[in-house]
Length: 179
Image (cartoon, rainbow, N blue to C red; front, side, top):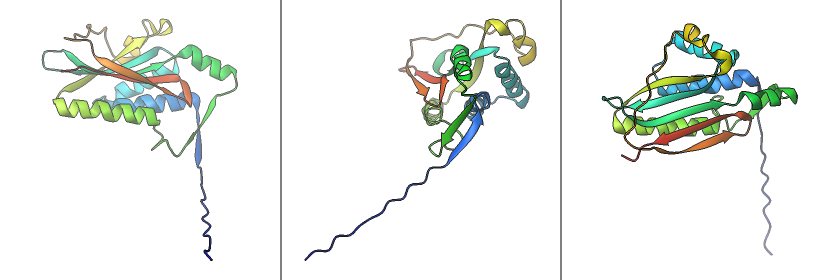
């Protein structure tokens, strides 16, 4: 007579909670620190601009020596969706252990793909911001920036976007040129 073996699987889920806006700033800060050589003062300016809803898109470009773009990493903040989440009483966001070092899975994955491309091509990065109507005229002074020249590209890059389920107002995308 065969004996049955019973196995018990115990799962444990750990969660952490963050203020919604702080978690957004954290994802932006992580992306900029991992993909650019942003200074501490510029990073502080970005955080202030997010606090004031002055920017809604942060783009890191991969450029060659002639200034042509070969890839982009984009973080977009939908402030209307953010306000909707707050109006529904969702000012606090819970994340679980799938978020490594408080980084959304989607953000981590996009950064890894982006950085592999940068390393493989041996190119450099630079970043820009898109200003909201509330930020017109304020962010240049606050961020110590000027209007950027248009980015040149030899070909249209292909890409995709990730939505972050825990932060419905934040999306991350990346575009890579074929060559």
